[in-house]
Length: 398
Image (tube, rainbow, N blue to C red; front, side, top):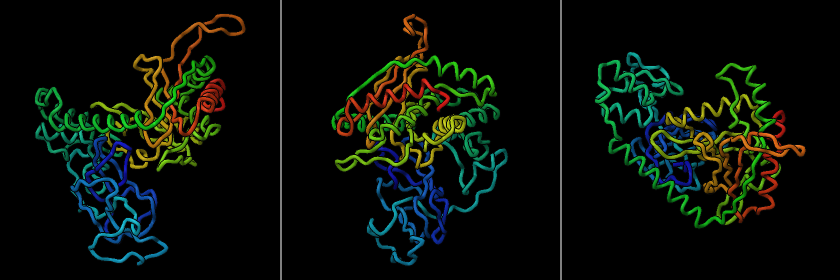
């Protein structure tokens, strides 16, 4: 069972997408796991052949539990067969297993929602369908890959004459328990972070005049759905600044720092039911702005629909959080272990700014850094924020 964030202790194996004897390739989605954060697509990180399954659908097991035995492509037959437990060193602990039999496509159901023989439905949508007495198989999914969202269930209920009052106006026990558990686990991880990680904090205001003007010119040439948001400039500037101060792009593990060779920026995204998830935008430093913007929109949509991939939860090497849309001018985040830094962006505000001896109005954003003093210090943190400012002053370089 892969660990999908420091706040995860266990996961429920929901479904398999492959059978014993199947060949699997690195990056292939092989199973689905349900956690407090939703239904997660689990990717395999090795290539080989599935020998046997050790955990069945419906079982909730702690992280690190061996789910299946995989024979490496280069050494088929090296792992002994048999039902006995297998030492962790001889297997790859990742979720794999048999595919359920094909399910019939129900009328009105988007075919993609039945990929792998099971409904792709968010936990919130499944819970609401149960409360309304509806079969989710008759609901058309509009989420990513045809996944059924809560809004799809609500719309289907209205079409079938179910009064809106048929659905509870307050969260049911399952939703409350899930939200409470998510809050509890996140709180426990961040409390430990504050106890164990010696945080230091820096902040700087940045003039966004050039970035705003550049965005205006760029967006005038784009259709509305393809326009760039300031947030994608922030993410790209952070990613490029990490090339100059790579110490902040690392993880703390077993009492030492482990630099990351890739820059995967985690983006803090609020969930509709409450709580936060910070999945990764992979290789943000090497992704063009237009593609990064499309990836960000897709990531937000899938996060709130509960259809994330395991690598998106396990890969972030730094986190970016922004509360500007909530009117907050500055935010000092708590480091999410095992990461060693978190960057915050506040609201863009019009302020008087001195330029060439003249006081002029300029759009200003306050950027903050919370970092681990075991890994870096204020000098390196200051260089990082200076690099972020420099890239935002030269938006064409992004």
